[in-house]
Amino acid sequence: MPDSVVVYGSLISKKEHSALDVIEEALPVRVEGFKRVFNQEATWRKGSGRNRAVLNVMRSKENWFNGILLTGFEMRDLEALDERERGYERIEIEKGLIKFYDHPAEPRGRIWTYTGKRIRSDIMPIPSYLDLCIEGAREWGERFYRDFLNTTFLSDGRTLREFLQADK
Image 1: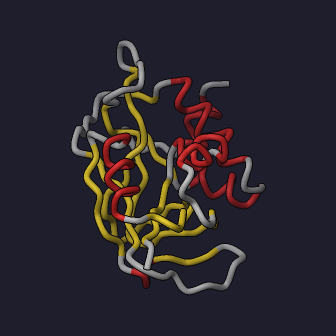
Image 2: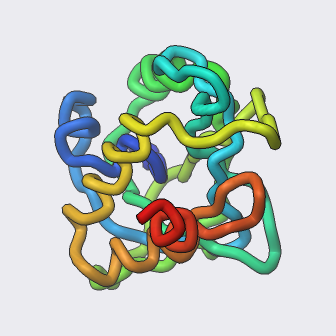
């Protein structure tokens, strides 16, 4: 039975994850027990100065994040994705932590996500990466986008919504 991967950053963008070729379905989900934070130092994306952060998720009993459950991964596909996600560790997520937005389904196979290994508290988002993530979140509808802004944090504790409003 193929596995699934919950993606939560640039891969929520349909143009980014469609390049993976192996995906059977892409379904919006909530993942309980994790916090999404811009605190992972990029390994292959270009940043400069303090703007070197990409997204990461960390276990947190008080938080949740939204993402896209991509289904259809065989082991060789996961290994290829591991290479793209170097700097991260692939971890298994318990099925009970996954809640579907509008699609009443039961996840099949094992469910994975990636958590960062290059965590820094002194960096900010890479602007082009941030734009890609926001664009990707908008593709999944207003509710998903709103949840993305409210459940994504900067390393200083502000939500992405607060950060974007302060930037105006």
